[in-house]
Image: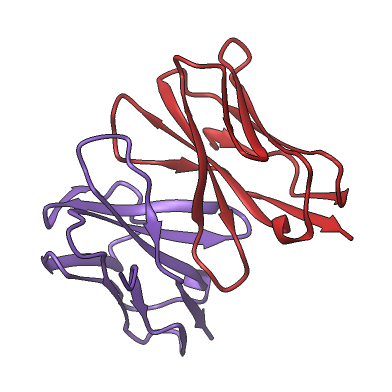
Length: 112
Length: 114
């Protein structure tokens, strides 16, 4: 049973447009959420995070939105660039735990 | 900083053989994690250590899997005997504990069990 779900295995977007990656979670104890980005043959790298006391966090072209009532978060990339093409993992943790639960990932392709 | 270093990068072995994956965390980090990535299950946590002590090994799939952290700068993940279904990418990650810290991942070991 996946506690963190990324239901879209892949997403294709045109350069300059917005990319929206979605993530749902089932565990109501999760209170901290992160997005990681992974290029082929490399390990995932941290991208952006959000605490459950917020509903939005922005860092440059990247914004994460959290809807606690729906147990849903999304990552917006505006504008999308070809270098953003990668696999994006959503992750969550509960109660200060170091343990992160990851989703299966969404492969984003940004076409020039 | 060299980051988290994993070896080997690729491992091809035959079913029944012992496999040992190695990890050197970032200096000063006191938490270490072993993850496995497969198409079916994504990134799943196998085990993690804090100050060299195993904290949660609930993700270790079977007794064939074991992990050790003899000191702050080295950890191993061993599979004995290996099976084809163990084929995956194994990642080691480290972090500073004490909060919701970000993980720093190594480049992974691609394991193929024939």
